[in-house]
Amino acid sequence: MDRALPLVLSAQAGGYGPLAAVVFETACLFVNSEGLPDLRRDSHQAKRWMSDLLDSAGLKPVPGDSADRRKELKRNRETTLQGIRAAMSQVRVDYIRSLDHDPEQREKLFPGLASSDEIFAYYRIVPQAQKEIVSANRRALQVASRIAFAEDEDLAIPPARSPQVVRSFRLALATLSPQALDAETRDQLRQELSETRAALLVLEKALT
Image (tube, rainbow, N blue to C red; front, side):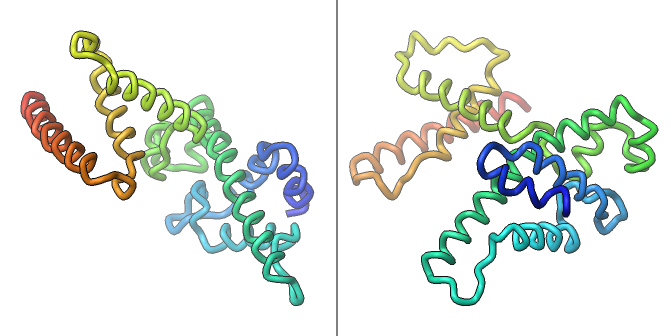
């Protein structure tokens, strides 16, 4: 706590990397229900520690604070938590991957988990940092956009790219807002979805 506290204010001004490293190091001191390091910070103790940290950093209203001040503190607290989570995803992924080069430490802390892949699977942690995921999603959406506006003769796709193309469209669909569509566009979208569903079923059948 003494190391983390002064990093909260500096993080808000210049980046969350150093603070995230201390938060992750602290999380590893706590254990989950099975006695393994609490890498996901799911335990009551880890959550309480984080709450105490933010309270001590002044991100907690006090008696007499105005409604606007309370809203500001709530906003700053959420921003800080989000910044820690984003930065810590890289710290956590790097740490887990590093255990492949330190099997003795891995066996000591994570008995029965024989590789970083098994650790990722056990904790249900995506083996990519958040910024890597965001970057991959952005590239996927760009691919989907190019295909969406291409003419039929421009749709030749290398076979190895097939999974990425399907994923691109899945990500693109998640960005749509049906509530904002007029009646005509809704009808067009409904027709396209029907035809897309049929095409997906054909493709899925061909893969089995």
